[in-house]
Length: 282
Image 1 (spheres, rainbow, N blue to C red):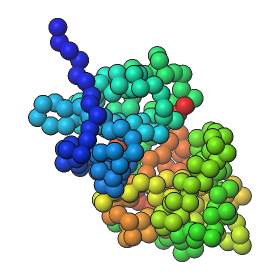
Image 2: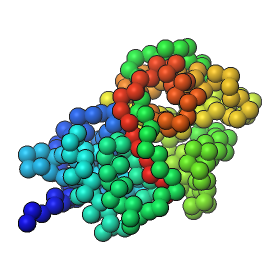
Image 3: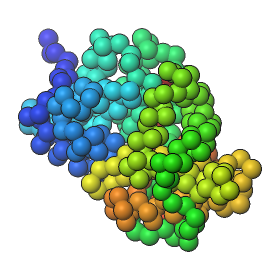
Image 4: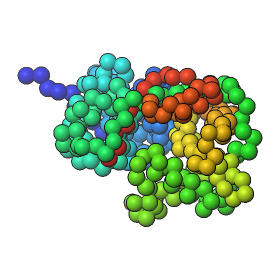
């Protein structure tokens, strides 16, 4: 009887193989790659990193932290999903989201849904976009890194963005202390940008994940009273220009397929579709 492949917890000795795997698609693997580059593949990573070997190479990994993030080479997604699902069921659901390349997320969710479902939301088609080089339109010059002294001004806009995008408030858990700390970390790192005028945040975005070759923009938001005026497009262009010169040469993001206005704005900035993500929200 053939045994199903099993995933194992990776450690420091696996780091070269993990880096080689993630380098096969730097845009799709940006989040995991950034964590590995910063902390390695051992205990300092802060969450288990599961891996699936084919015997000759590492075919897939899954970061099992606050988000469950699978990544596999083409053709290995379903085998990896079976191995990761078995580990995930044994560990129990500890994540708030399953997110990553759709080819890896969808078969994993098929196997986990009977025990982890129903999901609060399932977004199977999220175009993964990237731009290398300057934006195609003029950046908004008033978009700049947020100063630490402006954290309390930024936070309500960040909460509004999160609630609008995810469907629940980040303040529902621990009174929002963890979310505030995350926003503060991004501000201190120079990865939170905004257009602030007369004490009002008109536009904001974060560079939420960073690897040596790619960074991922997250949390793009325009104040409701200022929408429809091109602020999001010009603001995103400013984020791209800042990110590609100060953070990483390739700038990426993913967007819900049903958000036609955002997709059109990103196309005007010069983003092109390079893949597809999927998200399961709990």
